[in-house]
Image 1 (cartoon, rainbow, N blue to C red):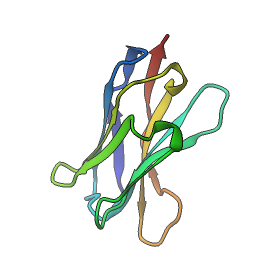
Image 2 (image 1 turned 180 degrees about the vertical axis):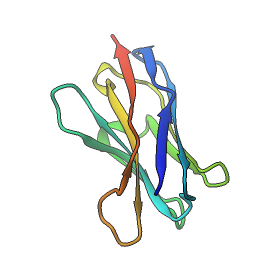
Image 3 (image 1 turned 45 degrees about the vertical axis):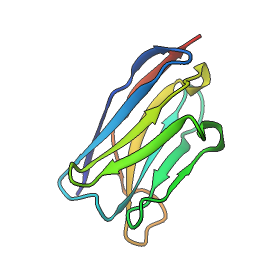
Image 4 (image 1 turned 60 degrees about the vertical axis):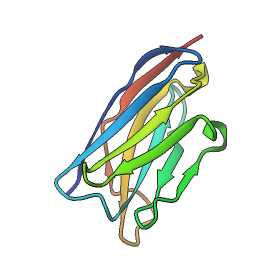
Length: 119
């Protein structure tokens, strides 16, 4: 079992920055693909960014490319999402997720952290 706990959310003005953290416990995440998802009110959850375990390749939702950066520190069992140039449309609950083995969908999810961007 992997437990994931997000932190770092909050209220920020448009153009500002936040750094989200996802701390894992219970098992090392060094061999898990780690991802960030978000869900805005009244909308479905959507993919934001992912980082592979084998070579730390990263992939992003088109609308956050160039503004968000996902990274991982396997020694600290933590994944980060640096968010710059935030826009009101980035407002959502952000959750991290872990995908292991041959699974194509995450097996473990955090509870989420609220990010609110004011205009």
